[in-house]
Image 1 (spheres, rainbow, N blue to C red):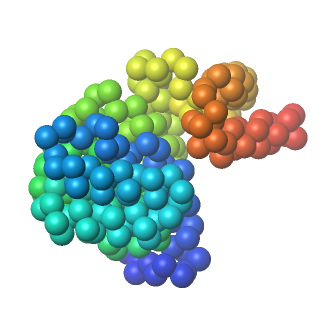
Image 2 (tube, rainbow, N blue to C red):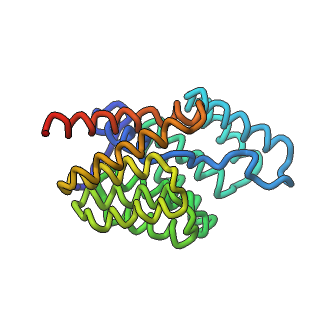
Length: 237
């Protein structure tokens, strides 16, 4: 895909943002995972940003992170989080700028590479996306989200065997990961292995049904995709 300038009100931009939302899950570094030595005001601003994200109020979240960066100094985690919110808010240029800044401040921040890879994947720059997913996994082999995202990107390139390997590796770390079963099933589906696809779709629905209510709400789009993919196979049969 050739490089384009994406604007917040363009249809192409909205499609890219939706793709990024599908690729990204739980990529914000939560306040309770940050060091306890942070000033109370910084902790409060991070909590305000997190609460705004949960409400879907991205403008308010960005405002809180802006205040945090201005008053508390530059932290890679804060730029990474702000970049992710910019991504969800359709501000793609600001998002990539923040991810680059986060990585410059902390070249070992795996989450920033994963988020930047999601940006590249949504833009169709699969080569850069794969390089960043690989860097994420090198830094954190337990980053199952990056392994799933890597598999999805490889599937977009019709590299089905390599994609299946990525999903298999993700499932090594969590055998009840509904999304991994769903995406692996879709890969089998596109490769023509319908029996394997149906088995994985059923595993995905079973796994997604056992998670807690809040998480299930966040993964409803995955469940609907699996049901649609199963319907495709039923029609084809």
